[in-house]
Image (cartoon, rainbow, N blue to C red; front, side, top):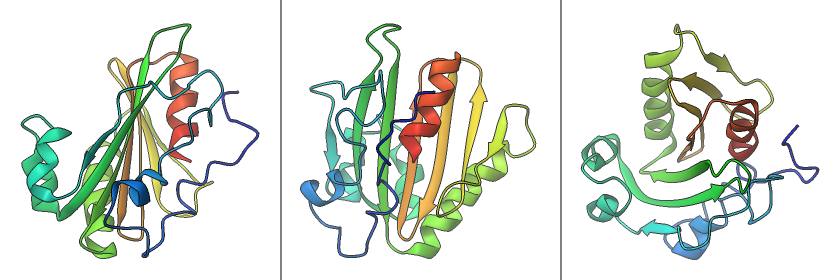
Length: 167
């Protein structure tokens, strides 16, 4: 299994004091080698310090996140050197916990009854995985944060990486 022996602290690090800077939000991303066979892909870190800079992450899709109340985001990619598949983790800070939960629930609603949906029970908060055409994805929310993991692939390693990077 791709789960590293080290517990990923993505959700346990999510604290109200961790906001307002690239360094603080970056601490919420999985560490460089947190997931076996999925090291950070150097040069892919993107930080959006405000809603009006979300276009740095979402080329044309930023309005959805702005409307949801996203006030900053950070994104980092990880790459499996064997398969060359890319996994992208995006941590969004929304205006408050209620907005993060509502945004998560809107994503969950879209896929909860579809094949490929899997509710996660081993997170400290609500989360799910979805395996669709060509990708494996994970979503969760905690406090004012909404986290998305998107892996380009649906093989066993890709699915395991989606879950491991979300934790």
